[in-house]
Amino acid sequence: MSTKKVIQVNKLTKNFGDFKAVNNITFDVGKGEVFGFLGANGAGKTTAMKMLIGITTPSSGKANVAGFDVNTHAEDIKKNIGYMSQKFALYDDLTVNENITFFGGIYGLTRKEIKEKSIELLKELNLEDVKNMLVASLPLGWKQKLSFSVSLLHNPKIVFLDEPTGGVDPITRRHFWEMIYKAASSGTTIFVTTHYMDEAEYCDRVSVMVNGKIEALDTPKKLKETYNVKSMDEVFLKLVRK
Amino acid sequence: MSISVSHISKSYKKVKALENISFDVKPGELFGLIGPDGAGKTTLFRILTTLMLADDGIAKVDNFDVITDYKNIRNCVGYMPGKFSLYQDLTVEENLNFFATIFGTTIEENYDLIKEIYIQIEPFKTRRAGNLSGGMKQKLALCCALIHKPTVLFLDEPTTGVDPVSRKEFWEMLKRLQHKGITILVSTPYMDEASMCDRIALIQEGKILEIDKPELIVKKHLKDIYNIRANDMFLLIQSLKSYKNHYSIYPFGEFVHYTDKNKDFNSTELKKYLETKKLTNIIIEKTTVTIEDAFMELAK
Image (cartoon, rainbow over all chains, first blue to last red; front, side, top):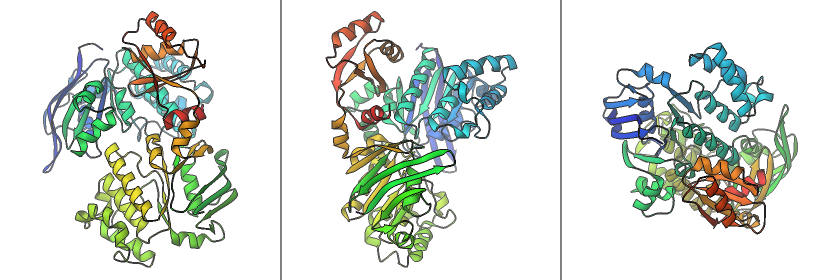
């Protein structure tokens, strides 16, 4: 992890009518950092994330993501980031290969690059035998691993992962995190939300959102020390239930 | 027995959703089906609530057969499906009233049972169900499943996608319902919720891996597990994988859970090996087995 910042958020706010969904949040994320973005349901995580990936305009405040301003250069942000969520990942009625080709095209890769990347990716994920099968027929864990790899096709600076492992079996969930570590160790920044508190411990730093505000931000170790508890689960409880 | 499942199988074309599943749930028991997506949990719920027929096997709920006595079962069970299935364009109160009427009862008659849960959403009783937050939807769905005072309650992944605090509160609610004498069969993909159940079945790919009290499942796990930590997680995992004596390696919170091939594991030797991989701040210590460790070992 270097000290270079790839996400810089300054007093970012989003109002829906009188409701402050995101209320004046400020934080930075470094290059190659695994950053956990936690919070209770309805705390404002999704709204904050939507502003960072350039699909929702902030009401006020600033954010710079992958070198671009979310207020003025949202389209450039989209080209420089990857995104995957549990809900939207791949097209079920396309095959594994077709999905790779499709997303490769969307991300602006050349035919040659797509071909090379597909071979590499299928080999790495051990999906060569099922490359012509519909994605719908794959187990959830395989889909999520494939989806993560697809979000990395264009070598983005940052990948946003919105609850990537919900419902995935424990072994695959761990393979998934090994993939995350690998991407991070090669310099890709990971911005991840999760409801699994053991996964919060995998992050370099973690922020906890409560009612639109970031109530805590530090390494899991420091957070546990600050709140004098043994696990991130307890940190979360203390912050959200107070 | 409140629920008895005997040699149930179900396939969808080529996919075996359930393979020869058998287990019993005692009256008043809180029984957990713990397993990931695709394990067959929902299929089992649909068979037990008489919404789907099994290919093979016998199942009874409250001593009623799911095929011949399906009408009786429908009257005495409560079912909360994984997907929110209330009427989005009815208000909170209208939904509850609707389900009470369907079962020939009124909100007042069984208000005691739902009171604790309902008072949390009562301030929003004129709001349409579609406009509720996730947590409130879940509470309303539970109220609707309880309004006819069922003897057996089926909850299919009620806590999926729910934050840890709301999950804890939900389980506290279940415990209180259990004390009122309701038998509960609940499924979850979160392994840490297993300890809240009296007994659990670990299920994966249509097969039951193990059934027992959570503390006994953990006890049956024979291998010693070690917490290992170092300055670089990715390098640590890679290094452990190339270590000759490794049996299993899983990231587990801030540690890696490591098991060794040998009974007399030598931590000094492993530490020396990791140091040759340029890892620093190495910690190796024995740790307690969790349900998730047991699940991974059984599923291996």
